Image (tube, rainbow, N blue to C red):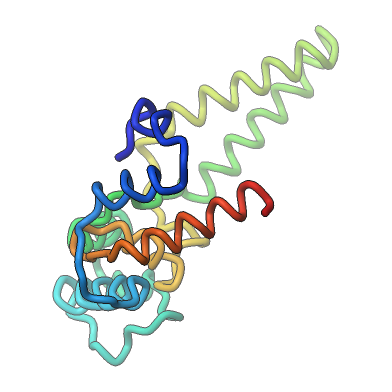
Length: 183
């Protein structure tokens, strides 16, 4: 994790490269980190869940490997095995998400008649915010946008089990600087 003070001290791309490289597991060996991340995910699925190695490819749907286990348990176990520094959060069940939207809409409609649309909109947004906070513990589904192994590779790349070379870090920092600054 990079602290704000550390990031503020970086005034050149070289300083950013040095900072990031210092935080990662370093290596002199030039390898494809995406490929290593896939292998790490595949190893996690085969060892932890007993999935056949042949069934694990980039298009594989992780939910198909859950069998009798809950999606939350599978998600947490895979995160632990991969040892990723960042990992996507689970999603709420569809029925809960739909209920939250419906409740906010009903609140908006009911309060519009009494107080006007501005107050009703503010109350509906506040209710939605509170409901979102209160229902965090109920997130138990693997998010659809991260259900394929391919979408987890960028998260697995953050694992301590994957080493980076200075050139790989430099290439990634260059790419990000170019994208962000529009060069």
